[in-house]
Length: 140
Length: 281
Figure 1: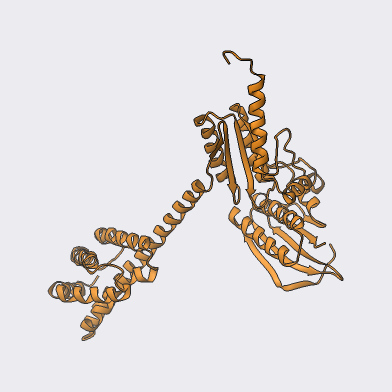
Figure 2: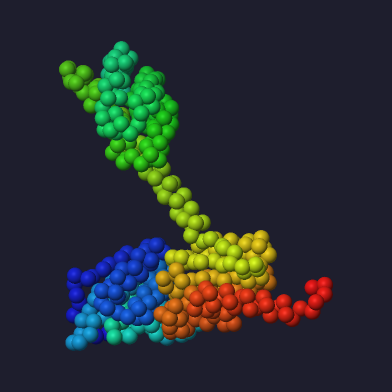
């Protein structure tokens, strides 16, 4: 994913250790999305994506960190969110991004659905090396 | 344990009981600023004072020993009452630490007295920490009881019409809350003899796959009992998000508003009534 200049004052970081923390991270993302001027639909999409990814971090990654910040491009503003854990990692990324595939008991739509909910999506993972998912949603 | 010191302390504590107790009450009373009645405080501290004297005379100054069991149970009671009444941890622990303040001028005279004082102070520190621990435990109990109450409170099942019950969901839907919602809804279906249930998610800020999965499970359970479930309160942004996520509600009827869902349920009831030939059924 391309690097964009970040608005450092808006940076938020939430440790994810319990499902309450997922809610906290989600709320932090919602506040930033409102500040960045995302439309209600885009706010909801980004917040839902954050909820999915945050829960993945907790359930499959064994907990980790959520980071969010407002970023600026030439003529647009967006919210950048990343979730990273130091869990077991994803052995087959393509399979993990397939609709309906889950290694747990969910619907298998979280990761693939989150990708559809945002404008930019990046998944960094290797077995044993943890997982980092970075997403970006622009205000339009 | 130096017997000389605990003996010296005991003599002092016994001989000047009334005097010391009065001073102790006064110091504690000042810090609590009259929020506990003088009579109650006097009773609490009096019991505690006697229990401490008794424990020291039996087994010395080791605060975590067996002989302090009575003192500890009194402290548990004191911490619990304070926590429930909304006092701060400092205001709770000061009840113990104030005794140090009272004894200090009496035991500052000689080296032996000072040594006795230091040992007694260590005992009181121990007991003070114990009260704080108990205080924290009580607060945690209160918090967990409250979140349990909130869980119950936030999921009412209301009767909307004859044969139609509704569940207005508000807030975050996690596994624990879904469980409560499901139990209450299924019970309400039986109790009110209803064949239609409406789950309203207007108050749910984000519907992700976990929430959807919980909703689907609730609907399936209601269907197994022969009830038809409608999900209402799907706002435009939620609809678009659900579609983008790829969640399918299948043949479960969904409506934008609770009014629509109620109309739908009433029409279904009407249809069933019209299809029924006049007769036994």
